[in-house]
Length: 216
Image (cartoon, rainbow, N blue to C red; front, side, top):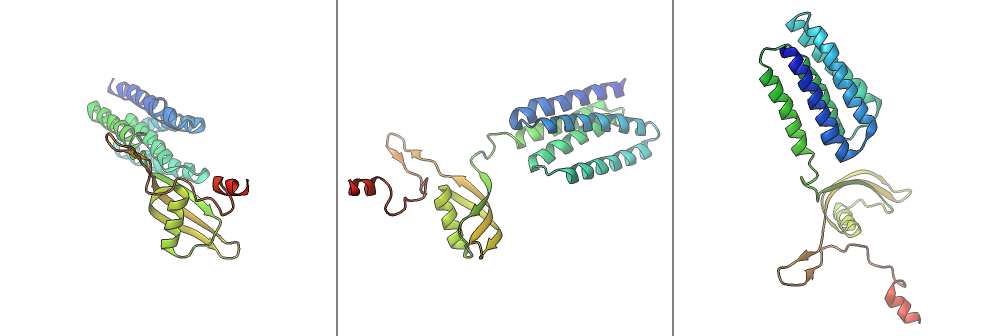
């Protein structure tokens, strides 16, 4: 009876993980199928293995966890948050397959997995921070000049820059940048204060409203 309760808890937990957390936030259908299939597959295989013996079943279950994760991670590239959801579905399947008399502990661990993903992947958590890989049309080898160029281009406060490639022949720079967009701040009872960085690069000479007015 306890094992049946764990099976039901696992199905409920993975359904909440996929349809309540992942899909409404990220909308990737193929990973929905992967998480559901892996969870149910691990649940079925690991529960059969645990019936052969506690130590043997646990060892084979963990080996299955490792093999499936290696196959999946080598097949296609996953984002870091998708890796977290994928491993969570595997963990839920193993928790549901283990034979134990303390179903409350397994149920509590399932709830803990869901709670951590709910908070860690919440859209409001650090929502103003961004990460982006950019290809710049100039080769910049000076770090200070690179940061200033990115802040002017993005209109944001750059927190971290990782240079991936500098091409002096084609005059390009590939960077991985972490930044926080700067938004106008309205003082209480006062006018809107502009952001400390320009939202757009300054217009080139000979263009823009002033240049048009001068030619008319």
